[in-house]
Image 1 (cartoon, rainbow over the protein chains, first blue to last red):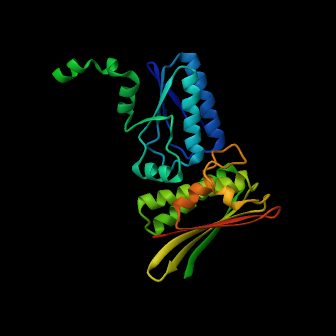
Image 2: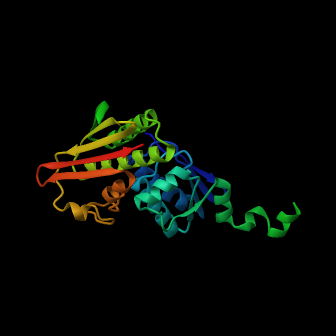
Image 3: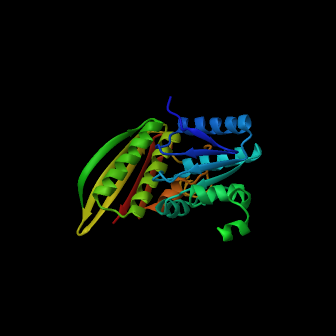
Length: 128
Length: 134
């Protein structure tokens, strides 16, 4: 069965959505993410949507659902990589993904989730 | 105004919604719509196809490329033989939903196109027409 892979990266889960979403795939993904969080004790979920050409209210709702479910299980979700045209359309559609944290890239998303601890303190960074 | 090309696709399953989106994308690219306009058209198509599927119990999408003088445009017509919409004004309000969705489909789609109309008869079905001009 077609499935969106959920990768483990330390205490994070990384999900890259590259296929055209449909109902079954979305529900399967919600199941997989929540199961992996509880199995691996993940504290963060990164969802990369840079390959998505559109986000409609169905996908928007799925992203919000995953963020909500993950939060209840103790993991923060960051949606990363939204294309500019998608952002324009999404807001005009009436959906601003309230309650879902976003970042421009996977790296920026990781920084949000790990805070500075992961990338070293501010001082170390200025020295480098 | 003349219709250059017309295609009819079924909207009976969740996968048909994906195919409807792909067809609208293909025609929007052929008409050389900008990327933002393509995205708006495909998103509107997705919302309306899902609406026909979830609320209209499935139907069809007719997509037409239009030429009006020097302007070109894309028209999408979604038809279903579902229960119909008793109050169209309510259905267009953001947040109004009879299903499990967010109620953004109709009002949201209307904002993504230039022309939008709903014809509906309770017990007979619904026809939604949306046009975006280049």
